[in-house]
Length: 508
Image 1 (cartoon, rainbow, N blue to C red):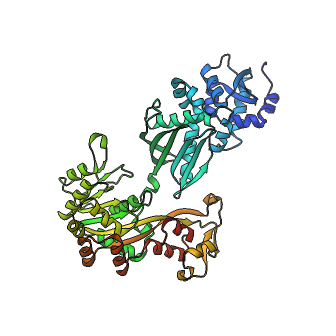
Image 2: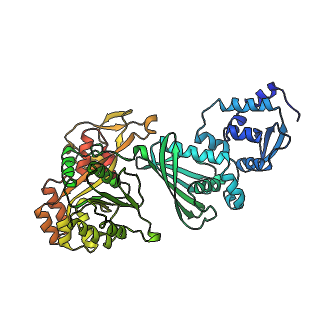
Image 3: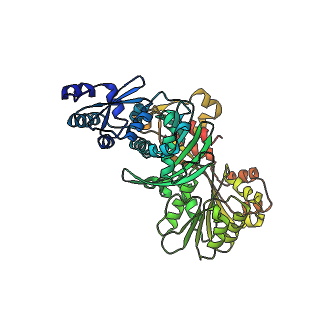
């Protein structure tokens, strides 16, 4: 086909297929390669160019991306460049639009057919690079904490964890899975040739003027590799104690115990319950410049100005226990231990508290009293637990009702059967109807519910007698400890969250 006139090209660029296909590529890449996809007919992709010879690698990329054989036709340079700019001016590019343009009929197992050299080249090419960047940007805009990529027979499933709950995101076709995952591996400096063993890495990005750390975990599965990206947004990572959602009386008590010169203060709960955020907030409050604060974490999630932080690296022997032992020779006042996960760390932490240090740490237990018995189970002497632990704060995160679609409601029958609704003391409660601001979930953001057990002489005596967690719990409640469930009901009464949320994370 010879050089066409502008009118003919205008007609071409109005085709839906042209607009869709062109948005799957960057304008810069198209102009650099001198090509523009014009139409996809069956298994044939028509591509216009103004060059005498198009780079074969670029044609291979187009063939792989669209799962089609490429036919090249000549057009005028001015006309094609105008068409590229015209197409790109029509719509803002989104991950969903980009993915739509990349869809094809390629088979589910095609990733095994792509040679490693081709995969490396494809992973670094503009369309795949752009798609990965868009997925990360849209995850941040959705306030996601994690991005999950899972390979299945006909798609690469993408989900964002927003406010603790997984939500579906646009899913690229399965034939792009290997290239997308390889791109992520390249960014994390992982081995793209290793697909049979789990790998862990880290990416440091600056997206939309925001500094973001991304922890990358890959795992082999039946249909390829599963990848999870943990997004650590520096802009949202650190908040003060007053922003954690504690009741006024809980906040006052917690401030009192962390202000003591020595002892152990524990934060407990499952993974993702906000324990690290609470400890960071405590350190920020205690950091005045007149004390030596050290942390050992796995990994270091957020950097604290003026605080030496040590990342655990078990491959070279940098464990919680070894680092904690070394820290005691650094003349610290306050030590943050990311997690007490073994007997040795527990023993050293209690010894540190006995010798005049304030130790802040976490444990994985469901409630506050169980943390005390967990230390006993780890082999710490009862007298050490009784004399060193000053307080245990159990916590969960509940989703906050979206303010843009908040509406009054009444408890449904299924909820009413599970709790005494009249005990709430209110006739009406609130829920979110669902809107664009909350991605139709009815929730936007999260806050904490808390159970604070502060040790006194009687509780210390019971621990020394090795009482069970249930007995300690009864005594704690008698002394004014508010349970996680009842603290959640406090937020229901004030319209912050819903009964469903409280029941989801802290069943009474």
